[in-house]
Each structure stands twice: as C-alpha cells, then as structure tokens.
Length: 408
Image 1 (cartoon, rainbow, N blue to C red):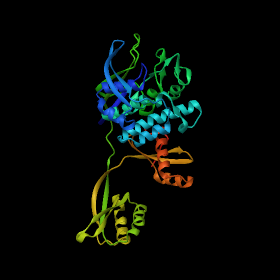
Image 2 (cartoon, rainbow, N blue to C red):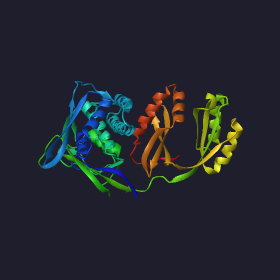
Image 3 (cartoon, helix red, strand yellow):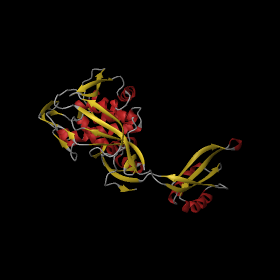
Image 4 (cartoon, rainbow, N blue to C red):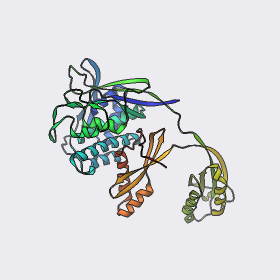
C-alpha cells in the first residue's frame, strides 16, 4: 500500500471560510503564498494577516482579511468565474475555488428560484469571501492535500440578520448546501456560513468521522467570536491515508518515422486513419533533417497486438522507407464520462480517476464544438460554460467519482 495526503475537517463547532483558512495556516500553510494566490484573482484588494488567539481557553489561529479598497458592488457568479479563469493560479487551486463558488451559485439559485448565472452574491461576493475561498484552496495545494473529508457540521439555531433581511438559522443557502450531509444545531446563532458549508460540500468527498490515517499535522482556526461555553473553532487533521497503488503498467509500442517529402495536406487524414485502425494516439513533431530539409516525425502509440497493422498502414499511406519500433510501458488512468447540462444542450465530460478519486477533468471538445456549431456560438464560450457546469456538478480534482459515471 502507498499513501496520499488527506485532510479531515472537524466542523463540529461550526464552519466559516476564515476559520478554515486559519486552521490551514496553523497546520503549516504560509501566509505570503496565500496572499499571492488571492492577489492573482483580486490584485491589491485585500491584505491577509494572522495572529494566535484563544477560544474558550483553546489556542487557535485567527486569519483576518483587511479590505484595501472601497467597493460595495454585488458580484455575479459569472464575474467571479471569469476572475478565477483569468487568474495566474495552479490548475487545482482554480478548479477547487471554481467548484466552491459553483456550489454557492447553485444553492443561491435554488433559494431564489433563478438561473445560477443570474445569481448576484451579497456577503459571499465581497472581497473577503473571495479571499477566504481562494486562500483555502491555495493552502490545500501548498500542503499537498489530495483528498478531503469532513464530519458532522454544527449549523446553529435562532435567527440572523442578512442582506435578505431577518432569516432563520441555518439560513436557506446553508440548508440547501447541507442536503445529504450530517448536521446538528450545536448552539445558538449562525455557526455555519454559506462559504464554509460550500467549501465542505464542494471539496470533501465523504461525510465521515476521523478516518484511519497516520496523523502528520493538526491545525485550529478561530472564528471571530469567543463564546465561553463552546470553542468557536474549526480543526483540520492532515495525514497519510492508505490507498492502493496507482494504475498498473500496460505494454505499449511506439512506431516512428521521419518523413520529409509528403504533401502536408495529407497529414490530417493519415492521423485520423491511424486512430481508426486502433492507434491509442498519433501525432506529428516538426524537425529539421540533413541539408536543412524541413520534415516531421510521425509517432504512433499502440497496443502490441495492433502494431503490425499500423506499421503496414504507415507504409501504405506515407512515403517513408522505414519505421522505428520501441517497446514501452504505459500508465493510464481509468476514465469515465459524466454528462453535464450546458445552456442549449449536453456535453460529456471525460474524467480520469485514481481508485475513484478524480485526477483529471476535461469537457469533450467534439461535444463542445458540435454544440457551439448548433447554437451559433463561439467554441471558447461553450467550453468555459461546460467547465463551469462540470465544477458545479462536483467534478473537481480530489473529489470522488460519482456513481452515475459511465466507463469511457
């Protein structure tokens, strides 16, 4: 058995974005790196700081988000999605942050009875909540967290004043996000915020008590209030969780040929024909041969059982006089498809997973192109919407492959 870094979140006293951020900083995430990630999304808008505090006698870390600009405007899900898409972030940070806001948008859309793209965030659209979400996702990346789970969440009781007026606790968005998760009141007041609940629902693959792991670090993050009867904290436990080894090696053959005298207009159909004949992949690499002649390396990756057929096809369809052959080992992630709804149609999303944990997510471009052509819209826009729909459906790196996924 090998292991991977797992984080378990203890939200038994409540959860909020700043509390999660404080717990991860206490567990070792470095604040300057988190500040850099936030600045990539909303440059010059906020400053992060941290300080040790006590909550009901327990030591914890409180992370504060200080606004540096005056901006009371409401932000739509589309605006936040575009900010994340255009930011210079690691892919997993961007994917996780997008997934969190997508879950928030879906919850708010359900509560208000409007499409998700029309949602205008209030509290969660402010700079500090964007900083909380991006900071948490950047901290997880810095700490090397591959998967997350969480336990029962205390959501609170009573009533609270919000941008929508006086509301019962849990507020409607938290109640919507909590569907399918274990919760309890746990105390009076709003103990779980929409942002904190969305982080758990978007990023935690399982609702479970502390799972078996070799504990490496712990962190305690503080909320703003200090209530004597209840430590207002979130805890994170980081450790190595056992799992089976990665995908097994498969035998593969690489066929290659250097070709400098073929009409380049023939290449697209040659590559397509090789794929139809059983190649796992086929591609061209431009090179310069002797006497400065421009040429291409034709490369064909295939199973050993199809190498003979593909070799014959290369000789038949190209002008080469020789084909090189190498035996390789190929490590391939299992793949599955999940259909997502995009305005005007459906797009299949290809998901690569390692023992049920999602590692790669990509909308099928043939579906994107076909839908864009049918709707008369730019492929770029349809691709972005398909990626956002995948994130909203929980298809993000580190989460569990859904049961309704079909094998690729």
